[in-house]
Length: 422
Ligand SMILES: *Cc1c(COP(=O)(O)O)cnc(C)c1O
Image (cartoon, rainbow, N blue to C red):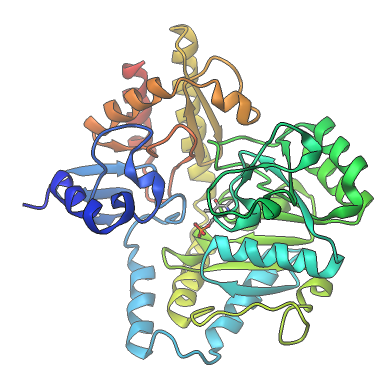
């Protein structure tokens, strides 16, 4: 029988750790990871036929919900016409035009297959155009799994970070400075001492990858300012935040202009697609026009692009953003007012349709605050919700997502279930 347990037992024999991406293994919440048979709208169906309301939504990618009719049809149509040629298609031109029209500071864009690749390319462009080696990132921001960004805060600010993975060369990590998120004095110190060596300052303008953490007022403007002071490129990694909070990048909402921006997740409509774009003075240095090399067999393939085009079309036509935001507001109010009344160790951080249930009494502004959270309590909450048919991200350090397919009623019921669990 295909139960979660039996599938996972088979998986560990042939897939490292049994999973194709680590957080799926439930290591931080315990228990047997989930196997999904299908999904429709906001609902997942497990291999045991149990239905779950999904607040993970493929880490935010499925903003319209699972198996959306129009997206599925677009994928079907393209499948019949061929899925990849390694030759140009009209659709990739349409898609690039669309992205450049929707993201005001994006003058040119290159399509790739994953957020990791988009970030890797953005960093290479920054190094190429500045002729500098080092980058500055922020502790707790995730930028995919390429060497330069698998680095966390070390003992000294100015000595480069600690390796977050074996196999990353020490010298690569030592080229990455790591400052605390929302911490202007560390940012300022690094830029003053080492600014002339920094090719890029890279940041998640809204952090989704340590749980949801918002930039403090004026923080993104400071990043722009410091990047200008030292001549580094400012990269906004919007693989999560792009098209999540409104029909553009978060940079448009914040009114801060990065030099380069990465997009992923939502723009691929559930297929592998991501993008790196920005000012054409920088983007045009990419091969074949320029001498910064980047390429991809499946890059901009018409299958992924068809899904992406359809998602953008539906988002524009239906504008689900106000409803997702309203559901998020209600959820957060219900949970936080009850947690406060009961003096519970729980705080819902929320912005529009994204939230994190932090098991903490304190506001969470950076990674050290997240580290204060009670991860055992989160694991318990996760499993209580799972038992009641709600799938949350299986880690305290992740964001949960409300899709356009979640009804306000479903979200309210979930909020009440959390309140009951407090
Ligand atoms: C998910 C994510 C990535 C990595 O994207 P993949 O497609 O998983 O490689 C990079 N940056 C941010 C901000 C992300 O959320």
